[in-house]
Length: 306
Ligand SMILES: NC(=O)c1ccc[n+]([C@@H]2O[C@H](COP(=O)([O-])OP(=O)(O)OC[C@H]3O[C@@H](n4cnc5c(N)ncnc54)[C@H](OP(=O)(O)O)[C@@H]3O)[C@@H](O)[C@H]2O)c1
Image 1 (spheres, helix red, strand yellow):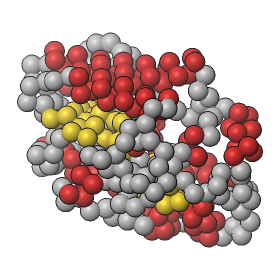
Image 2: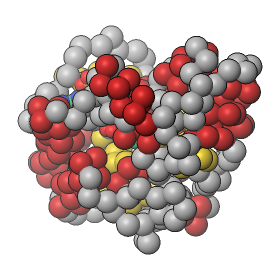
Image 3: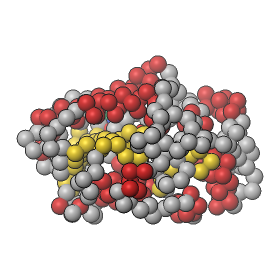
Image 4: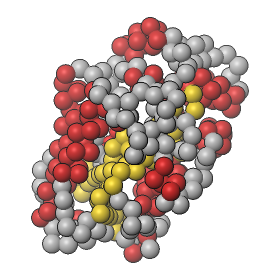
């Protein structure tokens, strides 16, 4: 069923886009990627220029695609200054809107539109699992970003188009994403707990991210909101212990909140990325029959770090 699909991925040049392309390129008919920069094409992948906010000749790619996936968005790994906050919101809302308008213009739009969202949409929770039905949405900046992103997406109604918002947990990858800087600081002996270490990390192995997207594509009865996370989160303290054990680094200096605040200001990021407790449950995926390949953090970390 995948073999017959042509897929357009907006924002496909980033970490998750490349993971998805690597997984899908031999399984689907063709992939178009919408990017703001020129990239060399390959046999399976054609890169097209767009600006992430307005219409252009790239709309032709949608006419010949069965699936549109939008992963565009300025990285949140920055200081939340007024300027950066504006850019974080605008890059998500404007790209989603540009794609929605383009879908309306298509004679035959893709039958499935998957739009990225984030597991960060749920409020800070150390012990209450948040699934798609009972999860409480938060009101902090990053939670508001996610809500506006999803609202923009679901405000579009395109006849006969299935819409799926994927609330993505922290994806653990070999070449990108959050695991790589954590690996680097752990090797320096700084891989102790961050903050009080009680915060839950909702995570997902990169291969399971790609498998979950493929699962959604091949299950035409599934639509709406999906949490893309491993079945169980892990507390920060235990996550760091496992990383140290796998890397064989006995020293793991703890990083209390005030020290993290200082470090984050120096390297121009926010501590929320490390300290917020995310307890996301992939209830709908599991109910629909998806089975993760990497169910335990140990399995995932061993696979990615060794
Ligand atoms: N990685 C995770 O663990 C994770 C977890 C939850 C949610 N997410 C969300 O999933 C999406 C993809 O994540 P990722 O890790 O692949 O991010 P990424 O590596 O930062 O890639 C995002 C892509 O978005 C495009 N982009 C950046 N600024 C843009 C703008 N102003 N307008 C239009 N496009 C812009 C870039 O493509 P070009 O430069 O080629 O245009 C970039 O390659 C993001 O929206 C992210 O918030 C990721």
